[in-house]
Length: 544
Image (cartoon, rainbow, N blue to C red; front, side):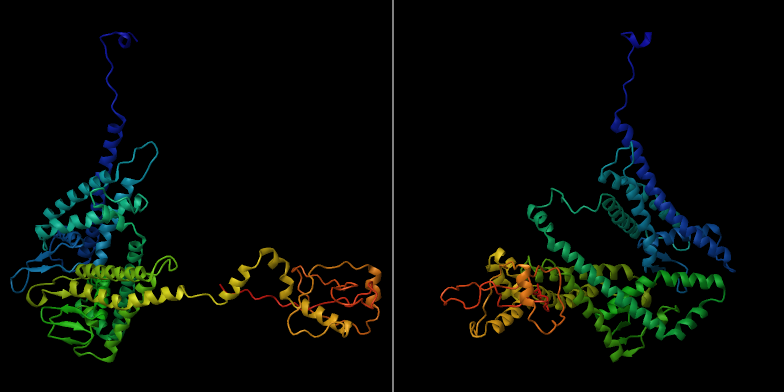
């Protein structure tokens, strides 16, 4: 207490809350990025070590297996590997990335970014830019170490390819994770963008075009997967022979099966490019298209390559794959129509055209990611050409999506049937319409026929409709009994619909109608017998 109250003794200043909380949070984000990279490396390392242990003829020791796992992890980011042990002695590049393998680092990096952006009690959440930078730093640090470590293995990574492929995948995955953790906001855009661009991007047409383009790309990929499955089933014997001839041990066959499963998304993109028309390359001198399989491909033995179409010109069966882009164009046109009663035909056509452009860009990116070399010379080019695939997807969908979108817009804006009747009803007074609802039932006709029969010649035949007075007159019980007594035959049972507010009370005629002589009938006697029942037809509601 004395030290605290002395003038010369000062307490140490408390650290600022922001500095105390933000430093651990930033360190946690860096560690999260490093852990995401380590989990991907660990998964592939365990898989490679298991295959190496089960192999009867391992080529290298455990160090070589671990370096191979690091190379496969870099290949999962699109990095090109180099194979030095070739028959010709010339280093052969391996750049065909299994797309299913890409999902591993993307999911892990996205999860790390989401965890770094999550809100916790008694903890201050870092800004989105700080989370993105911290997670990215941790991930890229492990990626650099993996590149250096894989350099001494059987398939080292190309440093230049690793220098931009690994950061590209990490940046895209981290952006997706931070954006998802923040609730997927669509704005506001950065202030450094021009005002016209910011105002244009927030228009609903762009979100609608993205949805339409994504729908068309999904249809193309679904058609490609269907083509691959049908081709595998059609060439089942060749696929089985290729699978069994590669190796005779179960560990080798398991490795081939895993590689085939990892390459199935690539085969799906190749099938979509084949249906679009450009096809895909099978080496430097061979191309497979629906119009024919030209060239002499130098193909290695692999189950998926055994399901390729036969060499030679195309057949009606291969031409039938054009149905896939046709369905994709119809899907883009259908999804591009929204709020048809609020926008013009030109706006709908523009949205469909933008959706076709989005579909072309998506397919171009997927084609570029699914292609790559498997070696040198004849094996230097495998997969679809990205620009040709994107242009074909855009052309197919643009040709069909715009007229389909305009036709759907016109169909949704068609005039409703019975519009004239609705206009006539809307012109009447609301109270009058409510009071005259019983005119649409069968009670009016039944009463009028009974009054005409009872009055004889007093009420002549009138061609037009005579609307009776809708106000009912109360009848004493004695009068009602006297009127009902002369009726000899029993009333016919008819169906009466309840709940419509119908008044079936007998109508009395006044003693001295306007413009007519005195009525010889006593005024107390009703001219119309009471209506026992009536068949009521429900009024048809005019279509909307």
